[in-house]
Image (cartoon, rainbow, N blue to C red; front, side):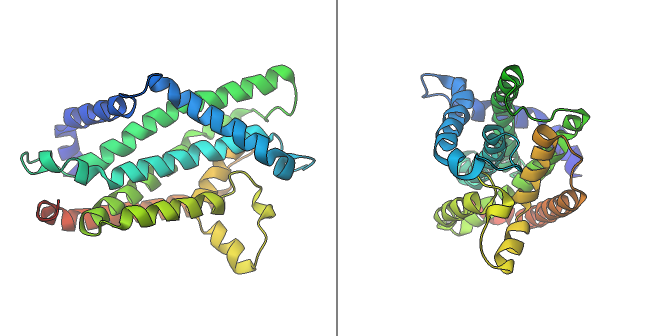
Length: 267
């Protein structure tokens, strides 16, 4: 039923995705160029600040700028897509009150539109990789494992969609969730090995286990395995992050389906 309904409304989904991408850069002088400039400038700043702390003279660090960029791009997609999915029902309130369409279209469209801009921003990573290959300094290990890159990206998409569905429901009934989630995302940024190696985290065993329980940790590490280290995906990371993402997607879908009829009373 879901697939049939989605196919019936595929043109609406496409139009909302296109509209979201246009709105994202509507008031920007550089437009979609910010998709490249934002991760590039952010990475340069973070490399300047943290390379001498985490990336120098560390045999486990193949290439710190690429290591940092991999984590930063994936985290940014997660953060932006889930936040926009969270606000999607409230932003579409005027349409929802007038037109009968599947309401999950709105959080889904927001995750898809952010995924498209995220894929475009990956060209910055390609540029960094080519640069270090040309200069021959600390080049990433590129081999056939790079063909496995879509796997962690697909898992990340499922995770964002599951979290986005849950947040979109919570934001309708609990307005303060947006502020709490901002705090959570800051915590998640520092709790995910984006600018430091996983082994650099100091603390109790419980703290380290909590970090490993973070599904974004496994997704980021799998992505680095493909594009930086040139090794096979860690099966534990894959099984855990995929299982976690599918569980959240199932929970999000069920919660959304049960609560969607009450949206109109609160938006």
